[in-house]
Picture (spheres, rainbow, N blue to C red):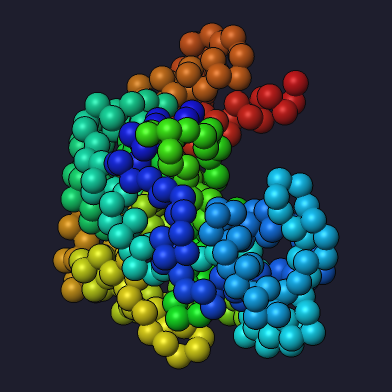
Length: 404
């Protein structure tokens, strides 16, 4: 996949590599701080290595290094290949670097301005995609879902509104959400980190986001390259279950580094945020919903940084509440009115169960006799008055596979 393909898959949004300091949206002091802290950590580095570390073009970093040398903050240690130099801190540079290090120890990718992040989320939102019914059917091809359920989910996605998925456990509610995102364009650009008046918020999380590699050469007009401060990822599906706490919905600061970590709702922008097993979190539903009555409608949220500063950030994902309970038992009417799409995931019919069983068996490479499935249904479901679940076919066949 090359850069031209990427642009077509992200609604035309493409973060081109800035060629000047002004183009980065950052001030001299912000880039200076990253350089000084990096040299404080590594001792000596070539100019191009510094540029790679903070993910800016060498043409942006080189003039900054020249200014720092003129201020007697850095000095040449030796010459380096490709008309470059090895740099080290002077005594004055050491003092300045330590002062910067006291604020935070971050010396990774140069950050993106909050306003640029907000614009990127809007440009790549799920609402821009508007998947068609054929897209949804393709995404759900491996699930036996009734057409009415597929249609209801499609309406929620196209409207960009929150969705309640409820029904008995084991019927694939989480699987449904993961496949919803398949129906939307696959990829989205996110910044590695964001700056808010000299505070760093780390957004890209390898544990949550799946990076996608592409050829970052000779982009569309043979002059532009992707800004390395941005990461191309698959649209995220962030799932929070019973472990969810209020702290996970706020920016948390690492006291050792001074770096802020983006909350779950920011990490899920452009994708889906699933509150799984809703009603059984460590926080009450009232605590959770009090903060989320307005954001789904206004498409923005207010976050309190550990420093006390309040910022406005996008709230632009498919918000899904998944529960085994009837929604009316766990939330009040006011909140239910704000979630217009409520989809009940029913148990499979016997015909659906058979079709799923045979398809799953094929996937495991099993040969099978349809009469065996008829026996299973009669003996272990009808006679036992046991309800069918979509997960049963997979679970039974996995046990068979493990016994072989």
